[in-house]
Amino acid sequence: MKVVILAGGAGTRLAEETEARPKPMVEIGGRPILWHIMKLYSRHGFDEFVVCVGYKGELIKQYFADYHLRHSDVTFDLRGNRVTSHSNQNEPWKVTVVDTGAETLTGGRLKRVREHLAGEDVFLMTYGDGVADVDLGALVRFHRAHGRLATLTAVTPTDRFGVLTLEEDGRVSRFKEKQKYRDVHINGGFFALSPRVLDYVEGDSTAFEREPLERLAGEGQLMAFRHAGFWQCMDTLRDRKFLEGLWSTGRAPWKTWD
Image (cartoon, rainbow, N blue to C red; front, side, top):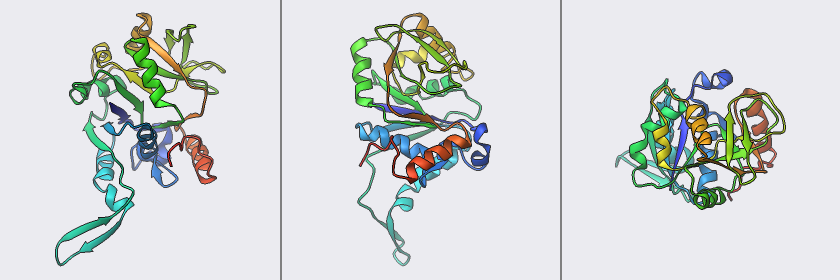
């Protein structure tokens, strides 16, 4: 099962960090937050990724091109023109990096990678700026069991996010983006989706969180997987410092891998 990661935004509210690099490459504990997200998926056995890039996307491509060089001991045989990597920590990942445009919105980025999802009945999707200790295997099982087109992960943060109206069976009956309420469920950004949801995206200027999710909710095709554990996005410098503090003290709840 493939995992699509939306990693193309400029991250303007993290301008101190993102003037020189895309937001998913901002580091927590010396590793890009993108790496942390991929480690979470890999922990649950999901190792094939489609990374949608845009703003400074060449830096993400270069990161994976140099991955072994960055994270391994290396012998350079200059006479023989050979490079040997000495690593016992190779990731089992297959990563496809797709340039989905600098100005494309989230729905448009998804639609642009449709060809890379051929043959998939379900794919996973998330954003390149949030970490959680979500049980992704349970998310997939829940999605397959209810049989609808889309499942989002519902979490309960403190403020500033869009709100969901949930029915007793988990169906999302209403989706409304970016209202300032507390102690309500919001979209945590970890999705299980049928490729058919791409038919709800008109084009590059479509934000997935608006018309597609609102229409899916209105048609009874959007379900919520409730996550009561840790969740945190990295939207601001304050968020980054919070995540860095958790990692540096060895108390990072999203670190569910060995």
